[in-house]
Image (cartoon, rainbow, N blue to C red; front, side):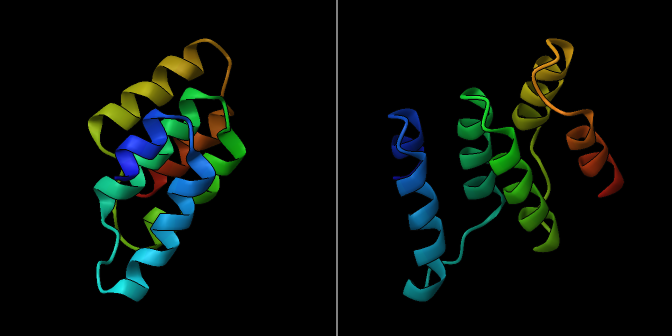
Amino acid sequence: MIHGLCHDGLLVEAEKLLREMGGKGCSPDGCTYNTIIRGLLNINETTWAMKLIQEMLERRFSADASTMELIIVLLSKDIVDPALLMLLKDSR
């Protein structure tokens, strides 16, 4: 469901669902976070993505290969702040 919301550009709704999951007995996992983060990065919402990455890391999840690949591509185009990559690197 979150993937579909992100695919359709409904990131606010996807994050809202993320926040509601725990209260409904279905805690979000790393895949859930990575899906929303990729959706945010695809539309250059880097500040929002960085907040979710920080939250994801605090919950002991890590970025998956496709999220890291997207961050590297965006870095090469000077679209995202290099601090994003450092945040992920420091978490390992």
